[in-house]
Length: 167
Image (cartoon, rainbow, N blue to C red; front, side, top):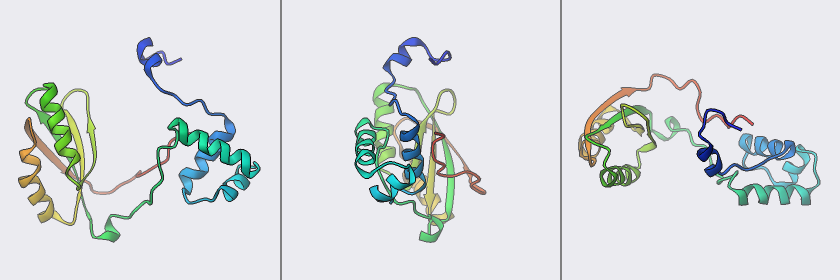
């Protein structure tokens, strides 16, 4: 199935089998999550009842994990976007868990990813401006559990953002 993954990883993975109609439903919802079931059914050329059943099955399987509005950070006064690379002292389970809980509590961290290799984490931080970022950096990020080093870079321009999944 996936030759680059160990067999155990493939067995443990939770994939949702979808057919061509499910893919059309998912693609339409990625483009516009506010579609009514009637409009969705029309776009994927199904009657309403089967479309609704498929939609509920996709939600129940976890293929659709939720719905939300896509907001424009700049329009809301959050025009400063930075990437922060975090290197930990050591990857001890308790310290990693404490770090991840603390990062999850910082509302200006809009994305946090644990990485293989060095650095250990990548954080995307959005604030109002440079002084707000500096204050967050000095007061919150530098005090996170287990942090050895922080390194940040500014986002000049987003080229691809919030792209839907390739279906």
